[in-house]
Image (cartoon, rainbow, N blue to C red; front, side, top):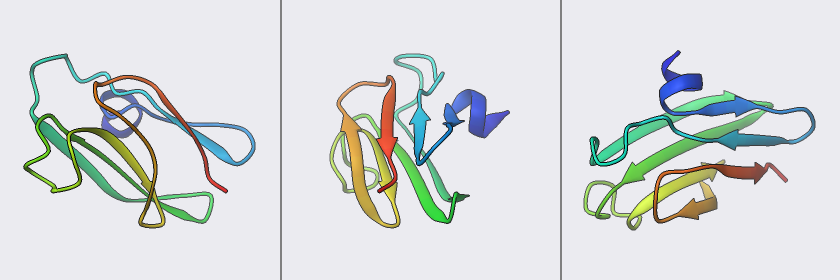
Amino acid sequence: LIINGLVGVRPQDGNSIVVNPLVPEGKWDYFCLDGLKYKGHGITVTWDRNGEKYGKGAGLRVFVDGKEKASRKELGKLEINLD
């Protein structure tokens, strides 16, 4: 429930993944889901309101195999191609 609901990781057909966190706006300054295995890839999802916690910049970021694949400044939906 935490991974699919709160962090919002949603498996997809094909070689993609959707991340759409349900964390209440303005309530959490940061979170990180690290080490998620998905279709042979390592997935990391971070939310860092001001960019100070993880040192990767402010906002929502998704990393695939250690490389940033998608980001946005506010919480919301990201669709990521794993290629």
